[in-house]
Length: 224
Picture 1 (cartoon, helix red, strand yellow):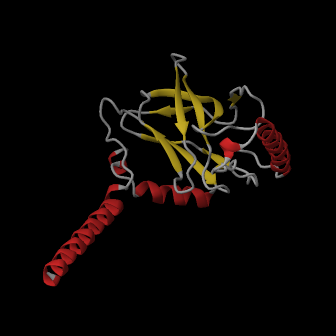
Picture 2 (cartoon, one colour):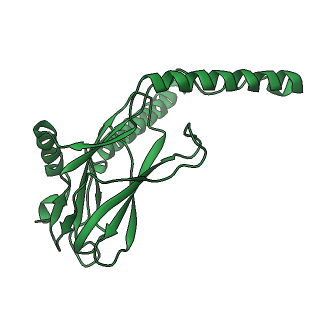
């Protein structure tokens, strides 16, 4: 009986070790970034340099930018997700031609809210030059989007287990207290004077790091 139990235990341990090895291999080989190869569907490659300076556990918003075709005036929306581990965002969905990035707007991720005005309007972009995309070629913008998110001291609302037992008056007082704390937190964040999104020049150090990262991207070498 003991031998049989010992044998079954060894089999379970061996299976778990095998699963861990498979998972580890997947994590190291399956998570490498790959971009599409140039074809009729992916005719151009636009690289948008991005630097994300993270102060919170994660960014709670994404940036939506409008890319306008200079000839047809058609616009395409491109979403940039701030990520401290990524130095660029890319698009392969634009046809060859001349383009201009005209507007940008921050939008909260699901489950989060952005402070300030209830209705946000897109911000115009005037400091990025027009750029040309050629078939089978890569184009890197000569500016980068710098993302920052000021540190908030206000944590998520506490969900007490006896919340349902509280009276309406107690719940009202909690909401009132939370609203006061949120207002104070927003004032403290304003004093940090951190701009959420800036468009700045590419410095040589960042250029070097960006090119080194692009070399590691699968299929990048297949673009001119």
